[in-house]
Image (cartoon, rainbow, N blue to C red; front, side, top):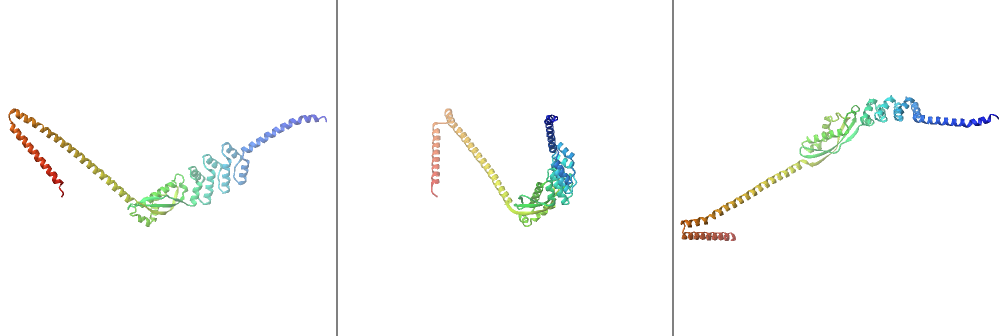
Length: 340
């Protein structure tokens, strides 16, 4: 009975200390399990993937999501691939898609395609879908070109659309041209083949000649694909380009001829106006000369070279001349007004 007060006095402090220690331990456990993905390590361990707790902690310290590395590693291990966490983590830090690369490696292994991790990672970092590339390598892809128009030698337009069957070339995926280049080269081949044909009917009768011409050129060189076949899906006749060009040329020639004729007409009008002006100048000279006659007559009177009778005779001659001119003018007018 004498020890009971001492125990009662000590119990509250011990309970507080035990509670504080328990809280600290609980917080430490929460931080530990939050920082160290123990559940992911257990999953990897039972899946056969070799990942240590230290590797997981290192991923946390390097700010790498452990699940983004461990899950693809488990998938690869189950598929029989031998990969290292360092390879996957390095590719992840370089900005690559680790899960997509692992899927591509698994698909390549199933299809007996020789594809190494470094090559798949390089293809992924180059911006290409490496998994889709493996799929296209196994299952060829059909690329449909838009309607491409070419003009035969006779001026008739021929419109064709082709379907190109390609297979991905894994070795040329890095640095090789894409689908746009294939479409452009096929379009060039269609235009060249149609343009070298004498008539459009030759192309319509044998569309396969377009495919054969394109395949002989080796259009898949330098691209990430291998062309298996080129099939002409549709061929149609378009506009008569030759006739349209001839019509446009005729209109242009007509406009040039009209311009030249208008130039000649304007030149003739200008020349006519110049002649009229010249006539007016000559008439002015005649009037000026006639104005000198009275002065000459007056001078003749003063010098005694001309008498009064001579002057009257001159006036009579002028009157007779004016009368004859008037009669002659009236006759011409009457003759012109008589009915034929």
